[in-house]
Length: 208
Image 1: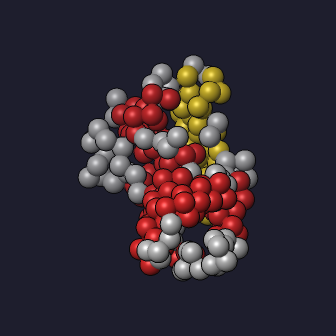
Image 2 (image 1 turned 135 degrees about the vertical axis):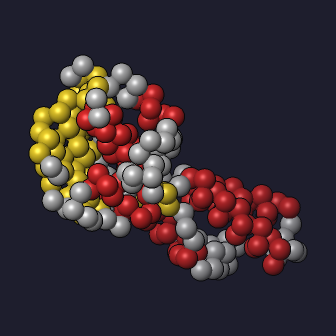
């Protein structure tokens, strides 16, 4: 299940902020449901760095002197929506804990993208081989489903595609390695929402 703003807000709907340190850009903020570890997270900043750590993993970013300004600009501090930029922000990622993202990656296989890709290749192959009997077309579709669609990993898909053959034809998926079949992991997106939301809660608390 992918992480949406609605899902994130539901996860932290009873969270409150505890300010452990607040000294310029040196901050330590904790967000939890009355001290529970369930979906708890901390935001820690120092010169040029921000760490988010907690129940959903640990990520360290680095870009500008005050990383709160990097993630939440003055333009959108008062907006209700939590605007995130996974592509750009991931470029500023410096470290990830292993438990949060296996194999130190923020990406995972997208079943939706893989299915769309397989459908395109299937239709293209049928178009180029119009003499195929209906039974052969069904066999090809079933073979794709059984050998590729349920693999669960990008490496597994690429390995199976590279050795895939149908009726002696090894060129069913030409140039497949150029296909985009990945998406951001749920834990990474959740933490991006948490960063923006946490900074906004800090701003509300600080202004009181």
